[in-house]
Length: 76
Length: 276
Image (cartoon, rainbow over all chains, first blue to last red; front, side, top):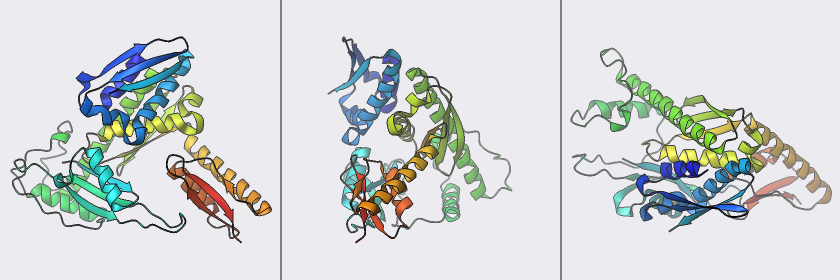
């Protein structure tokens, strides 16, 4: 899952080296904190959060296998 | 040179959105109005404004910036010819960077008319783009871990169709196609980021798109019948623009009802109303 998020975020930004995904395990859900270069924030959020939401949907599909909830947080 | 087309409620909004997308200011771009759009009445006959925003090239790269007269969309053939002309004229211009990987098609054959050479390049490019899109999608599918194999179905005229076969299609489609739409959106963004000319990539899972269209049409007809019987309006769940269009089109010829859309994206929905 972390690899998938990492891959997608890096494919979306201009500065892939600045991408950092932090996995925070929880009891019911795993949270993934996404950090990118500040200039790239818009690229992972998108207009009205469109890209961020699409990322969440894809992460949710990937979480089906693990039967666990997943949250994506974009940390500014 | 980056150029994008953007739609919006009006020209101003479309331009603003395009500038945000490109991350530039207004003085750095040329704005070309492709469609002014109309406000319409009660959601009928309204059409969005469309602009093409082109980032102006750096002066040092292109010593002679060509003035771009606002133009209507030219027919394909004419456009190709213009491109061929442009290619032929400035010899000083360095070879297009984007196409470096493409093998130069038959340079030694002077017999081929310029326009055709240019056309061959474009198709070659889109095949490459399609393959890149397929790889990105396959990588994501592998990451999701629900199986599925991506195959390029077609790639021409700026449109790429990719089918996903096998795997857990229910998960890959998602509720009302949520997952496949998201995958499609992300891959479009990822692929088009670096492209000079936008391509439209669409995904399908096991004929889902067609089935969904049928379902929507059936549902629309069913609701239309109820509206006629009860004389009361009926509301569909929020749909995307292309799906709303399917509903409007399905009921357009019915003389007893009319349809319109209400609400703002992404919660915009179709209302079926009886004609009094």
